[in-house]
Image (tube, rainbow, N blue to C red):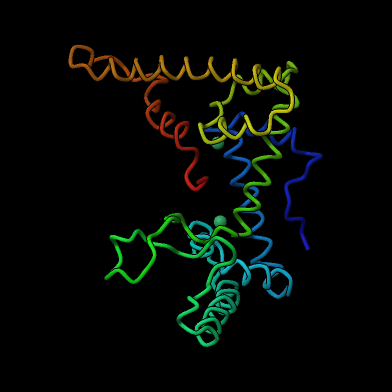
Length: 245
Ligand SMILES: [Zn+2]
Ligand SMILES: [Zn+2]
């Protein structure tokens, strides 16, 4: 079986490489780790009992990661694994008397809707509007990769090579900037990271202002420069790369 977890030994070099690519480097590496994980499952572990049991226990991948299977063209893998999940749901329907409620998802994943969305007054008001697939194994891998790469970034950000690489990147998206605070061991490392991030945010702000200025009719004749895609870069930095959350 191919390894499914990002490699700790190459994480630093992966990070330097990712800094050269578009968008948040931690998004880049995390999405690659999740894609690699799903790939290994689909092509090598569909018939691995622990893998299938884990997915049944989680009641399938979350919405995002379930549809990734279709994007990957994982027809047979999805057929086999999701048949397991649906058989489990069918069993739950047969087994559980209605008054006890239907336990589809593990732990706190049971779907609850706001009272005003429910017919009559027979059901309790809801709390959880998020995807109830809170135990998605691919989400767990995403979490693992995010923490690994943020940890490596913080560990090395005080060194010239890593700092220069990060300076050349798009910067951390807000999702990962937020996460970085929960990973930071030493205050100095986080401070260093935040200083570099501020520089990148200022540079993007300048590009966005230039972009807006050139949209003024008085300057419409001016050539579009590096600021041309700044609005897309801004979306990426606010939201993270598509599929990160
Ligand atoms: Zn990110
Ligand atoms: Zn997921």
